[in-house]
Amino acid sequence: MPLLVVGSVALDSVETPTDRRDNVLGGSAVFFSYAASYFTTVRLVGVVGEDWPDAHTQLLRQRSIDTEGLQVVPGKKTFRWRGKYLPNMNDRETLEVHLNVFGEFQPKLPDSYRACRYLFLANGSPRLQMSVLDQVPVPRLAVADTMDLWIREEREDLMRLLRRIDGLVLNDSEARLLTDEENLVRAGHLVRGMGPKFVVIKKGEHGAMFFSEHETYVLPAYPTEYVVDPTGAGDSFAGGMMGYLAARDDFSPKTLKESMAYGILVASFTVEDFSLNRLQRMERSDIDIRMEEYQRMLSF
Ligand code: AMP
Image 1 (tube, helix red, strand yellow):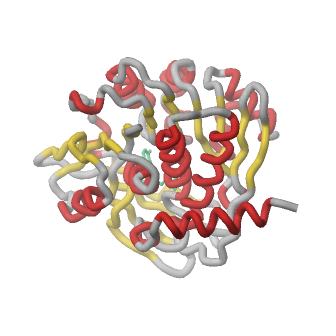
Image 2 (tube, protein in one colour):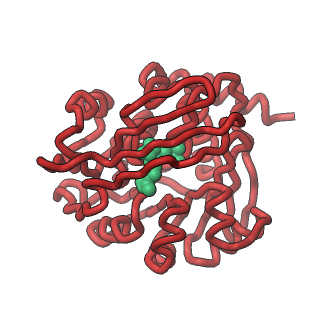
């Protein structure tokens, strides 16, 4: 089943304790699409300015990502984000965000996109996420991501969105901010009480937690030695997870758990280099090999 994603398409500048990159390909929808493309057909909705190198679009097309929904606005600038990682490589500081053309984005979905049944509303303003939801008449599964900026500044819209989606993916600090609850198990259930049928809390190097009415569990991260740049790990996690669900066209509890594992494994590749560099060198068979190791690691 094709999978529709809307979110940021960005030029990122990233500083780690030992290295840095400026104006590299990034954005929530970009990491998501690339990760999901290993599992299913992806239709991307986003916006860029005239500073956007066409080579980036070509890179996405090489993985058969449909970019008909990627608008290029002349005379405007692409969304830019600059972040800096602390020595633990898990916590980061946002140094600059320039929404630019993404701030005024009012997407109009191409007709071919409206029939999509699997929908991911990647990190972006809740108003933008809802405007896409409004244009997809009967999604089978609608899942969203969010972040501290929107929790702080657009909480009412976010609460409205939460009542309309099936799943929410967010990280541990965002779950605490949204619920004002330090205990993540309680926070997960509180977020579920805000509307979504399931909630996933990402915990960086500590894996991810899943909450539904009947199940609560945690899966560990794949232990990788080479953490070069964690940017996009959360979006790649969601891409692997949603890509697998859309490919299976099923979201039973068993498939959801498998999809969490695929998300974790794709993210473990993303962090091994800057931008999409590691994923560009990754084959589907690499994910499968890691899955075998991961399953061996978890059975005792
Ligand atoms: P992640 O590391 O998975 O949380 O995602 C990092 C990506 O999110 C970067 O490539 C940024 O371009 C993008 N990003 C950062 N801030 C925002 C924001 N306010 N809205 C949408 N995307 C963002």
